[in-house]
Amino acid sequence: MAQLQFGDAKRLSHAYMISALDREEALRTARRLAAAAVCTQQGRAPCGQCRACRKVQENIHPDVITIARLEDDKGRKKREIGVDQIRQLSRDAVVLPNEAERKVYIIEDADRMNAAAQNAALKLLEEPPKGVMFLLCVENAQLLLPTVRSRCAEILCGGGQSAEDEENRKLARGYVKAVSSGNRAELYRWCAAHEGMDNRAAAAFAEAASALLADMLCGREADLGLSRGQLRRLLALMERCGSYLQVNVGVRQLFGLLAVDAIDSGGNRG
Image 1 (cartoon, rainbow, N blue to C red):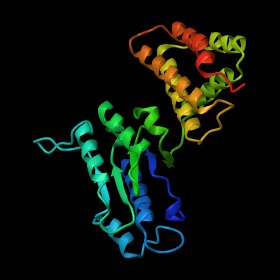
Image 2 (image 1 turned 30 degrees about the horizontal axis):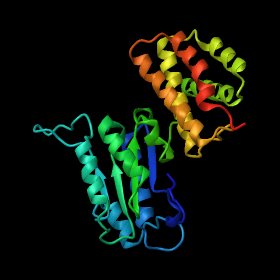
Image 3 (image 1 turned 120 degrees about the vertical axis):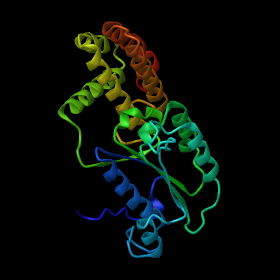
Image 4 (image 1 turned 90 degrees about the horizontal axis):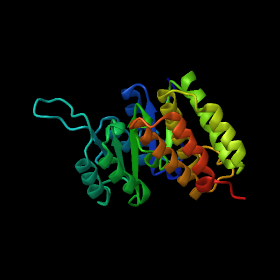
């Protein structure tokens, strides 16, 4: 396999979400990105030869810190990453690096952060300390809050979307396009045409729409004429719909809400 290179380390983002079906593949990518961040050679990074790169490869670099699920008293990994771990990370992140120009935090199983931990992480991602990078390794990005995902550049390792994922993404784009038109009649027609899906399909659509809106917010997708404020309001509406589905609100009622509230909260710029 060709070695990943990330170019000029100074151009790296402060946060990445690294998605892979194989946990080890995500970690390998995260370590190479961490090496690029602390590499001391000029040119494309990581060079793999400098002292900093070698230390990352050996997992002994003091400025590359891994956060993982804690173990219980029987040596088994706990189910979640808790808020106390993220709070400790926050306290450590403001301490200056030991050797490198920046500190890098690799969060293994970031999709196992509980809700409180994700909200604490969101504060860090929104206002990161200077010279700090966060690498979130996930198997299922949909388990992260859309607001967390929107603060991260995304790296996909292998795999790709399934046919079902692609269809849900296409549906999500069709809905956002109907909203961005500002034409309420067109939006009503779109919602009426799709309100017959079952609860599972509606939940998958809501997840795909939330992911699409998060991608639009962080510039990975074209915004279709919606402002950032409108995208945020539409994302909040979609998250409400997802929570309603969890308490068995009917799909027809859900699409009625999407038809009635979307343009008021997420119309086009015009």
